[in-house]
Length: 572
Image (tube, rainbow, N blue to C red; front, side):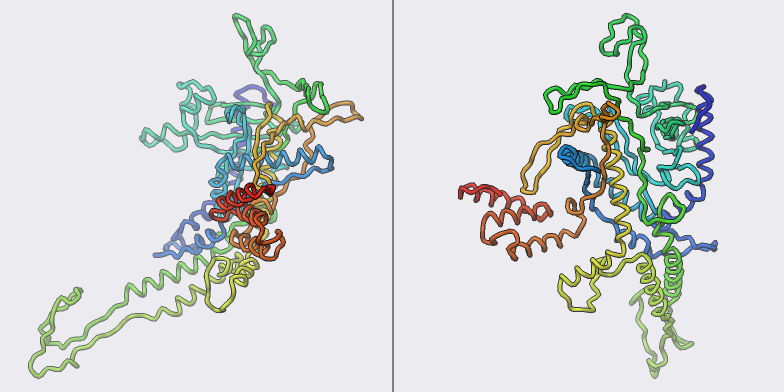
């Protein structure tokens, strides 16, 4: 994308106009998102009618929630062409991404991601470098957020994030954050765009809307422009190009400048001097900094759709059934509210009737018969309405591919073993496999971006720890200098980023834990782990159960480890 204007005011107007056009084009999609979320929350709206449903049976919420998975895919990296060094580097990448999974609140992020995906048809992951992050003495790290598609504005009519020239993210912040993070003077923060229109409430003036634009310039490099209302908060045309602060008077770095009147400015740096003394092979050269070439944004789709950036929303597919059920449930409730028992009494009866229970006693007159008294039961038959509603509910579940077994509902139709029930669940789960594949694809791209950011900005080695197949904890490290390769034809060094990313289906909890526990027990009984009576075999079995998160497995691992030590054997 070519930006002709270089003046600050002109650049601001350029990006504001670009954002306005993109937002207007996105209006129809945004309306669909909002409608889907209202449906998920139990909206009483009836399409094509001004009359709302008087009650809601929220099958949308039930169906969406039954699909939510807490499984977080485990990273896997492979070199495009294998060598011993590249194999070690691939393992280092996996350890890095795995440690980030543990360090950041991925359980919470996944919880948002799952619901966004099924309700909206997709979710937005924002993965970027944060220089302010500090962990165990390591400066800088990745910042990862899961955003609603409502907070993402794409380039119109482009359906792949890699093909876009630009896109926008919306954030809500505070006026004090504008001063702290972006250096905006307090008296200038009034120029920001407020989240809500001012209605006399004081707290409304504290929250502002921040718009971040990522774009590609004419050379394909990523730029970033951040604004709020009439304020430019940040303008970095070559966002991922290395920069350092130098003194314009002496040319030295800000940290070592001795000038009395420093004139500090930010300058781009193309190369770094690398000296890997003490390593094999020894490298001492000027090497270009690695520059990421992907937008820091990942789109997870629910299920793919033609000419759509996001996937298909489950809410859209079952909306007809949800609406019909709401009508039927409203009809059932109306019938029941009108129903009642109407007493029949003689015309000259000397009693009065009210709605109280046992509030009076009927005294018969001499010669009067109880047969003169009676009732009219106006309770309606709602069995057909209930049957129709259940039929629609079954339709909705079949549309999505959800069975009773998948939801954990025991129909009691068959007296079957636990294995047979698990098999039926797995078969039902197979219909939802494409959704799982889309999740794996998104996580693989997240790991690709994480790797590229650490390759570009992680100056010091990152110390990591991991647990091997035998339960032992090992120390490891990720160093971007391990990825330096030499191109003999062009006589220069470069950073090798040619790795393939996927997910390790054996490294996480992608399957039912109970099923893994059962398989481990079957392997123990079958002797595939060794002699079932041997402490070494039992240790191996409990290590497998610990990896599958079996309750209290750790205590058994320690117990059999001690037995091995006392027996003088080697710990497996």
